[in-house]
Image 1 (cartoon, one colour):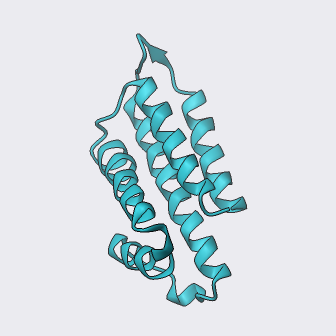
Image 2 (tube, rainbow, N blue to C red):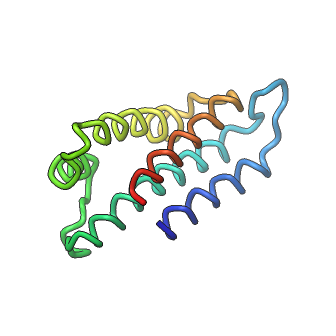
Length: 124
């Protein structure tokens, strides 16, 4: 989990340098960058466990659909909970936070990072 936690820490550092007024981030660009970095942390966590389970680097997922398939194949023992959580994180971190830049509220950003950390911790 070392690499995924490094990505998560990088996102926190980006946000720490971003000004907040009235509980909203003033500049959305670094917030979007942080969300993209946190999403990569989630993907790295999955990659790290897949590699531990014998998947080669060449076989690692290359798309969100590939990650969905890998979660169902290698983590089915979690009754689909990881797959559902991954979908929520994908929607929040990648789509709303990074791609669309819709999340400005500092509390929502903090909650999103916390959810990503909890997801990553499930792979320990």
